[in-house]
Amino acid sequence: MAAMGRKYLVKDFNHFITCYLCRGYLIKPTTVTECLHTFCKSCIVQHFEESNDCPRCGIQVHETNPLEMLRPDNTLEEIIFKLVPGLRDREEQQELEFWRRNPPWENGDGNPRCQQAAPPEVIGNGGDGGGSGHEDDSAEEDYHRSDPQIAICLDCLRNTGQSGETSVTSEISLSFCPQDLMKRFIRCSSRVTVGTIKKFLSLKLKLPSSYELDVLCNGEIMGRDHTLEFIYMTRWRLHGENTYPMVLEYRPRIDFGYNHDV
Image 1: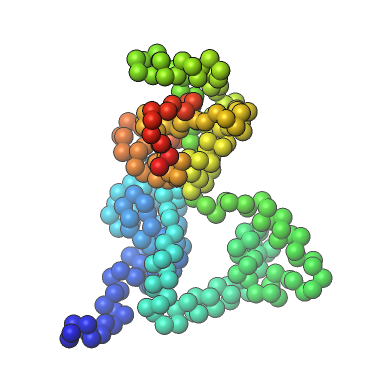
Image 2: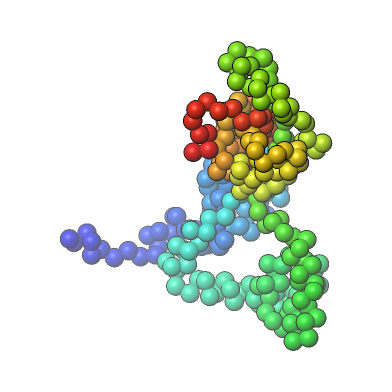
């Protein structure tokens, strides 16, 4: 019972909620997916301008673009704001002060998130609607750009004539022969699921709604709820011989008597 009544100080958790680079509390905590070390977003982005290695453990995060391997940790951010009284208000006030001194149109930054952080007198919504058109245009141009991006290659997997698949796919192949996409390389959000990729393929290949596709990575059928990030981290990256971008293969659905999408 005595242990339940023990009180903890904020400094007891500093090891978990401070940034290795700036030594301050983590602001917009951002995690490196390769090693799971977390830093302030601005700190790690500035570090990656000079190096591709994690500043804490030294592992190479990415050969060319380490920013692709960063993920925001919103849960940790909320925990820190609850642990440190007044931190959220101070950070919001400092951000507002920054945008008062640096209006978006003066520094050429059209990011709608920057305009949202700016106070009303800065972005100029004085009731005449003069600024709304510009903001809408910026939002349209920046649609989904804030998501972590990943490049993939979509290859058609045709019947190789191996025993076990030939008889199963022969009937399908008579009515449908998968085609190659005109543009096999695409770049999209890493949060896109296999189900969305299937819809994209069906649209581009002009498939009837009755046809279903399997999407594979390294010969393994992927479930429709798997995200591209999950596939990259658990299927593609673990094979050392694999290169970038990640290759996904597609073929007509083969029914083995169980559901691959579970």
